[in-house]
Amino acid sequence: MTAPAFDLVGVGLNATDTLLLVSKYPEYGGKVAFDREIVSPGGQVASALATCGKLGLRTKYIGVVGDDERGRIQMDSLREAAMNLDDVEIRAGCPNQSAYIVIDQSTGERTIFWHRPDCLRIDPDSITPEKIACGRMLHVDGHDTPAVARAARIAREHGIPVSVDVDNVYPGFDEVLACVDYLVGSTEFPGRWTGERDPFRALERIQSQHSMRVAAMTLGRYGALARESGRFVYSPGFVVNCVDTTGAGDVFHGAFCYSVLKGATVRDSLEFSNAMAALNCTRLGARGGIATAAEAHELMQRGERRSHHDFSRNQ
Image (cartoon, rainbow, N blue to C red):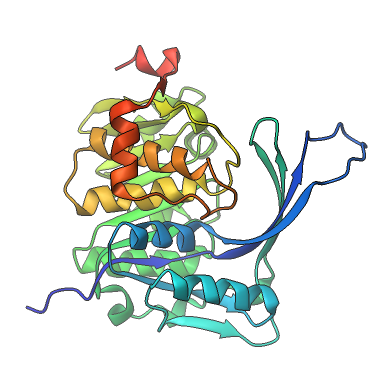
């Protein structure tokens, strides 16, 4: 049997961001001058794949890019990340997904205003078995649900593990979850999906309903929480000099996929992913601070953790 050509195949979003740096985010109705304006490529799946590429994996991106200047910036960045782009469609007459991200330089926290034209939707019929079965693992996000559901079903049929990054509730997304092995949702997603306010009960419910290997959630500066084999694993975040939190979650997901493919335990996967996400926050842009594995392990060995009592006490 021929070995898969790629370690990770990704189906989902890319975006081109405009970062606006302000000394402090204004009050509602306020007016402040910004210090710098930076155009920076991002997007959930595209940035996760860029992270895996930086870590030495063979990656393939499947998605749609606009044919405007932002689309050209995105394509240049994807090429620089050395991922396979054979199945990227450049959609004529369509602007690329964009975001305006206001970064509060006093904290590094960001506020995002984004827009994705309907003309960027991925056609489910374009997702064919040969495009998915060429990878050892599939990573998807929550947008374009019919397309990512088809990709996840193909992966399941071929025995390929599926990872998903999701932050909102999308119609029909249960079809995706039915084929997911590794869910890493945002802090809000488990509660939004299940109606359970308690994160432990929410993760337990999701995992039980969909029989996935791992149900997890990111917790921002406090790290991540996961449930595997009926047990919870909490991994605290790292204390760093935070410049910009943009893309931290995307880098976390890329690092998590990398760890799974390397055969790491869930605990080690969460810790490594927390370290990679934290290091990305020390630079500007969604992909501005993607670290090497050696840099992440250095932080893991010497870095200060920022644990959250409500999660650590339940282990």
